[in-house]
Image 1: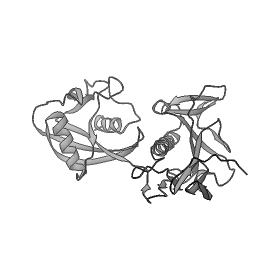
Image 2: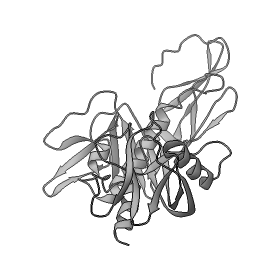
Image 3: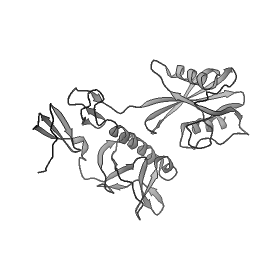
Image 4: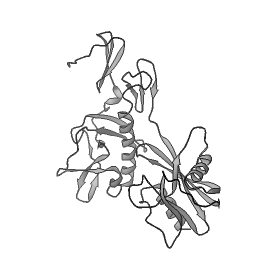
Length: 294
């Protein structure tokens, strides 16, 4: 048994309370159903990815840090749900509205910073968990009619009023390493966190192919033309929910004319005079390291 305080509702609505959804018509309760995707299927231990904003809860170990592995939330959380990870295993993602505190057992750390302290596979899973948290927080209400949404699957919510379905949205963005003889183009974007120089990047627009996006972003941000556009690789980028897609291209012509609102500096650099470059967690750094090794 549990007690619920229901607001007056003038038409059919679903009131989302976390583990249950109350479907009402006028002020009367018609149906109470459990949101099965909000509960674990058993009490088995699993990794718990707990966030406060972008702060990830790490467990202290004698040899370093890891993700808490337990059969229940390691700290008090406001919301949690099971998710299937990239390797097919089940984990829990959770968030709290109160700041995480350091204790003898746990340490909150920024997701980006955690790359240097936890196993790479756990960092990748933490990235997926953070994307789910971001989606969950931004999909509580239907964007069509404003009704509270209901969790219908691990990564699907549905509006009980108009039937609109919502899935986590991933925003594709390109990176391009431009070669000019023995040099590559490196730029400093105004939104970079730090003084490093990276690659020209930008979001895919409606109706574009990836190659068209590469050409447009290079033209808009630098005034250059390019050729020989070749796919390099891709990387999920959970800041907050992107897919970075890397390309290699060759300089074809033009003089550098930086898009002032996007870039603060940019130039061609050789291997022996590189500026500070991105950290190793990024696809941009992987692409630059590939060029350095060839």
